Image (cartoon, rainbow over all chains, first blue to last red):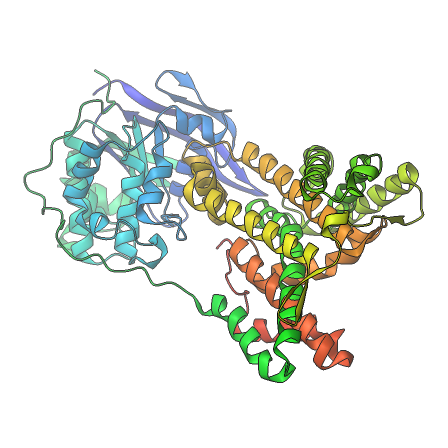
Length: 241
Length: 350
């Protein structure tokens, strides 16, 4: 396995009086796509938000690229090269697609070649370039959110349930996009509930339950083990095919 | 090897090509609120009956609206971006007006010269001083009073109202409790006549300054990266931080800029009324709140239209039905909110 890019060790997170993360241990290897699975309320989104510093870890440590980022503020974490695509997508609806991407390009003007590369798998963005993002469909907003995360090179993408509520055709285009990103050695940590979406994409997988990582291993091992899927995810792969 | 994507990526062969030649759909624009102002003005023409009177009333309404917009625009941005209910915003109006007297009173002789250039020069200096003082005060206000109560609306209301009372009393301590006369510069007194219509010179200046401020804010918000950040921050500050921007600095900058605009508005309002009192900011807060509610909290464009609408309605009502002029603002607000419950252009975060 490649060296770890991101490591969470015994991370606890409290939100108000609720103890959400209860000692998360997670390793994201450099390169490839890691998947975080789990039922609703298992702590997946909280894990991503804690990594981004949007909620502070109350105990444990988070190391990214050899640096302790546990106490860093969100903008400083982002500046280290982590991009975040939240579950809500959080596109700026009053801004055009161009303006959304322009804001994400912190270091200067957007790279034309890179934009063309993004348009390659999200052609709708070119079509709606000067269109307010708030007027786009859910799938198109998801494209804006992901494009915003990759408009400049980033070391790590954190993507929270990108397929939620999207039509199958849009999901296929997202699969193609993530494959493309993988081919360009971008490290991705993907939170999903849709196992069939990630089984062919993921290199490693962690399964969360009750605020902890209950299982960690390779995606191939989980995809080929119906009994393990049944135990961890409560599903039979055959039932989803 | 580092996973950083450093090379220029090639276009993927298997992907569908960009639809470069497809016609771009035009973005729908919500212009109904913009049309309200000219429609209202034109509807009032037959009711007023006399064209010169209508022109005078309309210009007076536009001037008053511009001054209220200048004072209110900072507050709506502060609320939209920082989610702060600053009931003390009126303090910056009063402080700005009084700070201007530091220039206007010693240079009274220059203001009495019959030279537009000299008069405007002194006014520009006074406005600069007022805006600097209120920007600094805004910066301190945010650090000392606002910062401990972020996210707590009830405490914000209480502490900012307290801040305004303290500011008013400090004005009384420094400048005295008496109202201070603030006559207009010589060259801005009186009216110019367009046919039979009399238009006060100062009201024309107010309209011009208001348009310049609106254009400046519009261009800043729509043509600069800082403006994009403010608009994005109004909608989702957390996401702006996740993109790597330190929104706290933006907050402080916007708060100081909003305070400076209130200071500018205070100078203009003081010259319009030709007297200053420590309570002037508090007195105008009702109008400012009505304007930002009508416009849609957080929307500068909505604030602009709301201010013009409110001032025009007040002027027309004062002429046509003086008895309802006092409640015309409230009637307008109710009508707008029945039509658009979140205001003309809502920017409330979801």
